[in-house]
Image 1: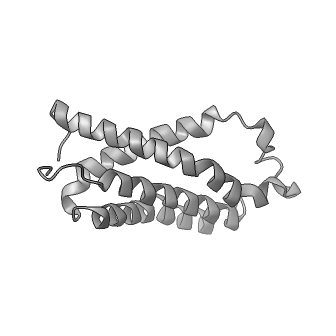
Image 2: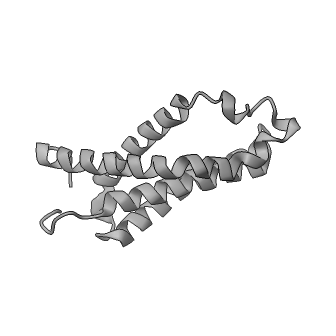
Length: 146
């Protein structure tokens, strides 16, 4: 499926709004769950600020841009994956490996910018985002889609 006709854009934007809303419901508690250990670590006080001081427009805007780009990548590369939930799961997994796991493995072995466990928690959070959003994008509403 390409994004050439208005019908394709309508499908894409509808799924984008569904995926964004679904992820934002999950994102706040997952951020607290995954990163709460690091908020209270005094050695990371220069990286993390308290939850009450977070300007939440930043993470929401980052999710908005990331989910939009992931959806465009899904719709453009969709023909290489099976249809349905399996295709969404496979796309999310392969996207996570290519976009998050491989660069993080390289960065943790070459640099020492932040603790390794912080990198891997961040990668797992973003991988959950990619897999969840890809599954939402893969849901088919009608049978005549490509």
